[in-house]
Length: 284
Image (cartoon, rainbow, N blue to C red):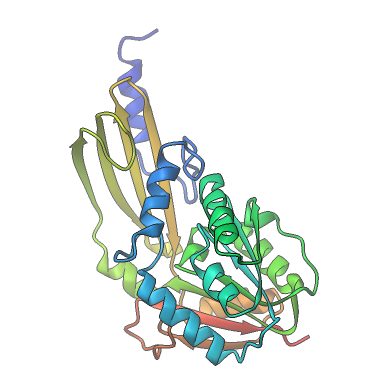
C-alpha cells in the first residue's frame, strides 16, 4: 500500500461532494448518536432536534384552529421523533399515526404513550416508503425536514402523501427559504472533544458549511475522527424553496390549493422570511 494513500483518501473526502451525497455512517440509528438526538428532542428550551416545546404547543394550537380539525380526524406525522406533536394531537382526541426512522425515538414514543394512556400508532420505518390510500385528514412534516430530500425523493413522497389523504385533507410542512441560506456563511472549523454529541470518547470534529447556489442547496457536514482511527462523514442537506418553486413541486403531485405562512404558528409570510410554512389541500 502506498504510504501516502491514507492522506490521499482523506483529501478526496474533503473535496466538495456531489449534491445529496450520502453520509458514510448511520446517523438515526447509531447506538450513541440516537441517544444524543433523543436528549436534544426532549430539551424543552432549545431549537435542536425539535423546536422548543412552547413553540410546539403554539403550533399545535394554531394548526387545530386554522384547519378546523375535529375530534376523530386522522393525522399522520412524518418524522415524528419521540412523539412531541403526536402526543399533543392525541390529547385532543385525534387518531394519530407517527412514523420515524429512529428506533430509539420510536421506542421512547411508544413507552410514553403507554404510560400516559394515549392511543397512538408509532411505526419505525423510512417515511419515503409509506403506502396509504385516502386515510388521513392531515399529514405533517415539520421542522424543515422536507429540505433534506433530493428532487427525486421529494416528488415521490409528495405523490404518496397526496394519495394517503382524504379529499379535503391538508398537508402541512415547512422549508427554509433562500433568505436563510443568505444568512449562513461558508466556513470550516475544527474542534477537539473529550466526549460530545458524536462520540462518548475523545474525537476531533471538522464542521463544514458549503453552498450550492445554482441548486439552492446548503450542506452542513461533520467529519469525525476518533481515537481508534475511525473516520466518518455525516451530511445534512437543506434545499431552500421560494413560493414559486415549492408551488411547482406541489402542483406536479396534484396539490393546487395552497396557503403560505412565515412559520407553523401562522405568522405572516414576507419576502424577508427565512422559513415558509405551506398548507396544501387535496381537493379531489
